[in-house]
Image (cartoon, rainbow, N blue to C red; front, side, top):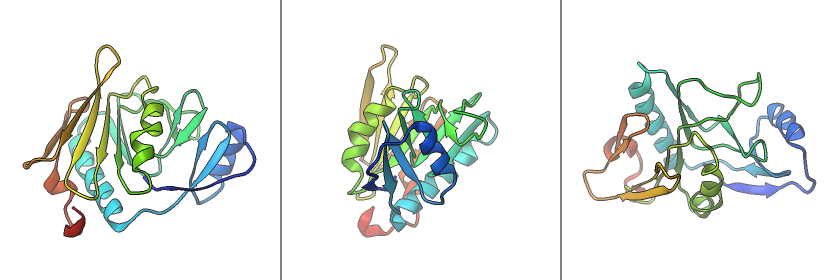
Length: 195
Protein backbone atom coordinates (compact mmCIF):
# COMPACT_ATOMS: atom_id res chain seq x y z
CA UNK A 1 0.00 0.00 0.00
CA UNK A 2 1.02 3.56 -0.31
CA UNK A 3 2.71 5.23 2.62
CA UNK A 4 1.22 7.48 5.24
CA UNK A 5 2.42 11.05 4.76
CA UNK A 6 0.57 13.52 6.93
CA UNK A 7 -1.85 13.53 9.79
CA UNK A 8 -4.61 16.10 10.14
CA UNK A 9 -4.63 18.25 13.26
CA UNK A 10 -8.27 17.87 14.33
CA UNK A 11 -10.23 14.72 15.05
CA UNK A 12 -13.09 13.77 12.75
CA UNK A 13 -16.08 11.54 13.35
CA UNK A 14 -16.30 8.47 11.14
CA UNK A 15 -19.22 10.06 9.26
CA UNK A 16 -17.22 13.25 8.64
CA UNK A 17 -14.32 11.12 7.40
CA UNK A 18 -16.53 9.12 5.00
CA UNK A 19 -18.16 12.28 3.64
CA UNK A 20 -14.77 13.89 3.12
CA UNK A 21 -13.28 10.75 1.59
CA UNK A 22 -16.15 10.37 -0.88
CA UNK A 23 -15.80 13.96 -2.11
CA UNK A 24 -12.05 14.10 -2.70
CA UNK A 25 -9.77 12.47 -5.26
CA UNK A 26 -7.06 11.76 -2.68
CA UNK A 27 -7.23 8.82 -0.29
CA UNK A 28 -6.61 8.83 3.43
CA UNK A 29 -6.88 6.29 6.20
CA UNK A 30 -8.89 6.81 9.37
CA UNK A 31 -7.73 5.71 12.82
CA UNK A 32 -10.02 6.61 15.72
CA UNK A 33 -10.64 10.16 14.52
CA UNK A 34 -7.21 10.82 13.06
CA UNK A 35 -6.78 11.11 9.28
CA UNK A 36 -3.60 10.07 7.50
CA UNK A 37 -3.09 11.13 3.87
CA UNK A 38 -1.75 8.45 1.54
CA UNK A 39 1.15 8.92 -0.86
CA UNK A 40 1.71 7.38 -4.28
CA UNK A 41 3.37 4.05 -4.96
CA UNK A 42 6.43 3.08 -7.02
CA UNK A 43 6.37 1.53 -10.48
CA UNK A 44 7.36 -1.89 -9.10
CA UNK A 45 4.69 -1.69 -6.41
CA UNK A 46 2.03 -0.91 -9.02
CA UNK A 47 3.30 -3.62 -11.37
CA UNK A 48 3.14 -6.27 -8.60
CA UNK A 49 -0.38 -5.21 -7.56
CA UNK A 50 -1.55 -5.31 -11.19
CA UNK A 51 0.00 -8.74 -11.75
CA UNK A 52 -1.59 -10.23 -8.63
CA UNK A 53 -4.98 -8.67 -9.33
CA UNK A 54 -4.93 -9.90 -12.95
CA UNK A 55 -4.07 -13.45 -11.92
CA UNK A 56 -6.74 -13.53 -9.21
CA UNK A 57 -9.33 -12.05 -11.56
CA UNK A 58 -8.82 -14.90 -14.04
CA UNK A 59 -8.88 -17.58 -11.36
CA UNK A 60 -11.93 -16.16 -9.57
CA UNK A 61 -13.98 -15.34 -12.68
CA UNK A 62 -16.15 -18.50 -12.67
CA UNK A 63 -16.89 -18.20 -8.93
CA UNK A 64 -18.86 -15.90 -6.63
CA UNK A 65 -15.66 -14.14 -5.60
CA UNK A 66 -14.24 -10.69 -6.35
CA UNK A 67 -10.88 -9.01 -6.02
CA UNK A 68 -10.30 -5.29 -5.65
CA UNK A 69 -7.00 -3.45 -6.04
CA UNK A 70 -5.97 -0.26 -4.22
CA UNK A 71 -9.22 1.66 -3.94
CA UNK A 72 -11.59 -0.58 -1.96
CA UNK A 73 -11.73 0.81 1.55
CA UNK A 74 -12.06 -1.73 4.38
CA UNK A 75 -13.89 -0.87 7.60
CA UNK A 76 -12.43 -2.34 10.78
CA UNK A 77 -13.60 -2.50 14.40
CA UNK A 78 -17.10 -1.13 13.78
CA UNK A 79 -15.92 2.04 12.06
CA UNK A 80 -13.03 2.81 14.39
CA UNK A 81 -10.61 2.34 11.48
CA UNK A 82 -10.76 2.58 7.69
CA UNK A 83 -7.83 1.42 5.55
CA UNK A 84 -6.97 0.77 1.90
CA UNK A 85 -5.27 -2.62 1.38
CA UNK A 86 -3.39 -3.19 -1.88
CA UNK A 87 -5.65 -6.14 -2.75
CA UNK A 88 -8.83 -7.41 -1.11
CA UNK A 89 -10.66 -10.62 -2.02
CA UNK A 90 -14.23 -11.56 -1.12
CA UNK A 91 -16.21 -14.73 -1.68
CA UNK A 92 -19.95 -15.08 -1.34
CA UNK A 93 -22.18 -12.22 -0.24
CA UNK A 94 -20.27 -8.98 0.22
CA UNK A 95 -21.06 -6.79 3.23
CA UNK A 96 -20.66 -3.02 2.98
CA UNK A 97 -20.81 -0.16 5.47
CA UNK A 98 -23.73 1.47 3.65
CA UNK A 99 -25.50 1.85 0.31
CA UNK A 100 -22.45 3.58 -1.23
CA UNK A 101 -20.77 0.14 -1.39
CA UNK A 102 -17.30 1.64 -1.12
CA UNK A 103 -16.40 0.33 2.33
CA UNK A 104 -16.07 -3.45 2.53
CA UNK A 105 -16.59 -5.20 5.86
CA UNK A 106 -15.97 -8.91 5.13
CA UNK A 107 -12.74 -9.56 3.20
CA UNK A 108 -11.51 -13.16 3.07
CA UNK A 109 -7.97 -12.40 1.83
CA UNK A 110 -5.93 -9.21 2.14
CA UNK A 111 -2.63 -8.73 0.29
CA UNK A 112 -0.13 -5.93 0.97
CA UNK A 113 2.92 -5.20 -1.18
CA UNK A 114 5.72 -4.10 1.14
CA UNK A 115 7.69 -0.90 0.69
CA UNK A 116 10.35 0.75 2.83
CA UNK A 117 7.86 3.28 4.19
CA UNK A 118 5.02 0.85 4.98
CA UNK A 119 6.69 -2.43 5.91
CA UNK A 120 6.73 -1.88 9.69
CA UNK A 121 3.08 -0.73 9.64
CA UNK A 122 1.95 -3.63 7.40
CA UNK A 123 3.71 -6.18 9.62
CA UNK A 124 2.74 -4.58 12.93
CA UNK A 125 -0.24 -2.35 13.73
CA UNK A 126 -2.07 -2.90 10.45
CA UNK A 127 -1.90 -6.68 10.79
CA UNK A 128 -3.20 -6.40 14.36
CA UNK A 129 -6.16 -4.38 13.04
CA UNK A 130 -6.77 -6.92 10.28
CA UNK A 131 -6.85 -9.76 12.82
CA UNK A 132 -10.04 -8.26 14.29
CA UNK A 133 -11.94 -8.84 11.01
CA UNK A 134 -13.96 -12.04 11.61
CA UNK A 135 -14.14 -13.03 7.92
CA UNK A 136 -10.40 -12.68 7.20
CA UNK A 137 -8.72 -16.05 6.59
CA UNK A 138 -5.39 -15.19 4.95
CA UNK A 139 -3.06 -12.18 5.08
CA UNK A 140 -0.26 -12.01 2.51
CA UNK A 141 2.84 -9.81 2.40
CA UNK A 142 4.67 -9.54 -0.93
CA UNK A 143 8.20 -8.15 -1.07
CA UNK A 144 9.36 -5.65 -3.69
CA UNK A 145 13.01 -6.14 -2.78
CA UNK A 146 13.25 -9.89 -3.44
CA UNK A 147 11.04 -12.67 -4.69
CA UNK A 148 9.32 -13.60 -1.47
CA UNK A 149 5.77 -14.21 -0.26
CA UNK A 150 4.80 -14.35 3.40
CA UNK A 151 1.42 -15.65 4.47
CA UNK A 152 -0.50 -15.71 7.71
CA UNK A 153 -3.38 -18.21 7.85
CA UNK A 154 -6.07 -18.08 10.48
CA UNK A 155 -6.35 -21.35 12.39
CA UNK A 156 -9.47 -22.94 13.89
CA UNK A 157 -8.57 -21.59 17.35
CA UNK A 158 -8.21 -18.02 16.01
CA UNK A 159 -4.41 -18.00 16.05
CA UNK A 160 -2.39 -17.17 12.92
CA UNK A 161 0.12 -19.55 11.33
CA UNK A 162 3.06 -17.87 9.53
CA UNK A 163 4.92 -19.21 6.50
CA UNK A 164 7.57 -17.56 4.30
CA UNK A 165 8.12 -18.72 0.71
CA UNK A 166 11.40 -17.63 -0.86
CA UNK A 167 13.07 -20.69 -2.35
CA UNK A 168 12.34 -21.36 -6.05
CA UNK A 169 9.96 -22.36 -7.36
CA UNK A 170 7.88 -19.96 -5.30
CA UNK A 171 4.18 -20.78 -5.40
CA UNK A 172 1.65 -19.43 -2.96
CA UNK A 173 -1.56 -21.37 -2.49
CA UNK A 174 -4.38 -19.23 -1.15
CA UNK A 175 -6.39 -22.01 0.47
CA UNK A 176 -9.40 -19.92 1.46
CA UNK A 177 -10.12 -18.95 -2.16
CA UNK A 178 -8.46 -21.91 -3.94
CA UNK A 179 -6.05 -19.79 -5.98
CA UNK A 180 -2.36 -20.09 -6.81
CA UNK A 181 0.13 -17.26 -7.25
CA UNK A 182 3.59 -17.92 -8.69
CA UNK A 183 6.65 -15.70 -8.42
CA UNK A 184 6.97 -15.74 -12.22
CA UNK A 185 3.55 -14.10 -12.70
CA UNK A 186 3.67 -11.82 -9.64
CA UNK A 187 7.08 -10.37 -10.57
CA UNK A 188 6.54 -10.25 -14.36
CA UNK A 189 7.93 -6.99 -15.82
CA UNK A 190 9.24 -5.90 -12.41
CA UNK A 191 12.72 -4.39 -12.62
CA UNK A 192 15.24 -7.17 -12.01
CA UNK A 193 17.40 -5.31 -9.48
CA UNK A 194 14.38 -5.08 -7.18
CA UNK A 195 12.87 -8.53 -7.57
